[in-house]
Structure formats: structure tokens, C-alpha cells
Amino acid sequence: MENSLALGRSLIDTELDTGFLNFIIKPIVKSFYDYWAKNEAKSGTLKQIKITLDSGKQLALNGNTKQSFDKIIEQNFPKYFKNDQTSRMGNIGHKNFERFKQNAKETFISYLKELVKLLEVAEDVENYGDLCRVAFNSKEVAEENLMRQLEFTEKGIKIVEEDPSILKVPIGKKIIVKALRRGFELTKKEFIEALNDTYNQK
Image 1 (tube, rainbow, N blue to C red):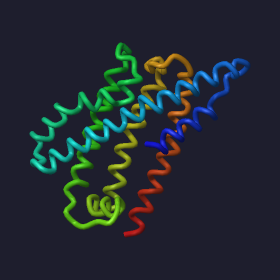
Image 2 (image 1 turned 120 degrees about the horizontal axis):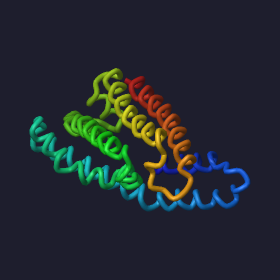
Image 3 (image 1 turned 90 degrees about the vertical axis):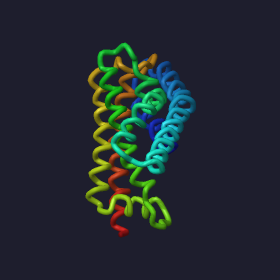
Image 4 (image 1 turned 30 degrees about the horizontal axis):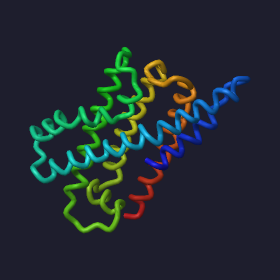
């Protein structure tokens, strides 16, 4: 999370080229991003992580049946979405907001499925790499999971790219959209490299 926010800050800076109004617009956009990153993004992301972990723990301890899984989603997705940046920064009255919400729900479901597999690992493991290699016993399975998660992120960014007015921000929507796209491409590359490193150690 910290790395992503720092990357976002640097990308916002590189995308800021507003011509002769640069000296006025630049500090406003950067100040907005810094406030958002420090308050909204950090607190929301940490709450989402806790909600997902608590949900996964319930399933791992009490039985991961389809019925219990669906019940956990029904109970906890509203809290998850309340802390999601698509909810916090999206205009609820926008025509594409329901697409935003559905994408967030599919993301939560996918996260939870993968998390339960990690929590159900009984073997002794020394680190996160070991944990992943046991839970997802082949690089192909892990890669499939990663690509699915990246597809959800891609879908969310495309919704914003189609119509940036969905963002509930006062200024700099186009700059933010460019930074989102660039950040996604860089992060995607890093995730793929990390996956390769994890499974090449096997």
C-alpha cells in the first residue's frame, strides 16, 4: 500500500503539465492527492484488508461451503465497498457507478477465495513465498489468479477512462486517469516479476 501511494505521488508529478496555468494547477492537484493518500486511501485500504482477513478467517474456521461463502459476501461486502476507493471517490449518481460497484464485488469475491486457500495451509512455511507455493501448487495456478485480479483492476480503470466525470474530485481528473493507467502498467509488471521470482525458487 505504501509503495503504491508513493508511486502514485511520483506519477501525478510526472503527468502534471497544464501549460501556462501549471504554476496554479500543480500545487492544487498535488495537495489534493497528498490529502487523499494520507487520509482516504490509507484508512480505507487498511479497513478493506481487515474486513477481507476477518471474512477469510470465519470461513477457514467454520467451514468454507458455498452457503457460508455467499453469506459472508452478503454480510461483509457492504462494509468492504464502503471503504473501497471506487465508492469513496466515485459519483454515486453516475450512470457507470453500478459497474464500479459490481467490479468491486467481483474483486472482493476473488480476493476471499484466494485468501481462504492461504489460511487453510497446514504446512510449516517460513515466508509469504513459501505460503503461496503451498497454497497454489503451480506457477500456472498462481499466474491465473494474478491475471484475474489484474483484470478486475483493468476493468475499473477502463470505466474511469471511458468517462472521468465518474470521479468525485474537484480538479485534475485527466491527470489522475493518466496516472492510474501508468501506475497499473508498472505495478502489473512488478507483480508478474515477483510471481516469476517466487516460483523459480521452487
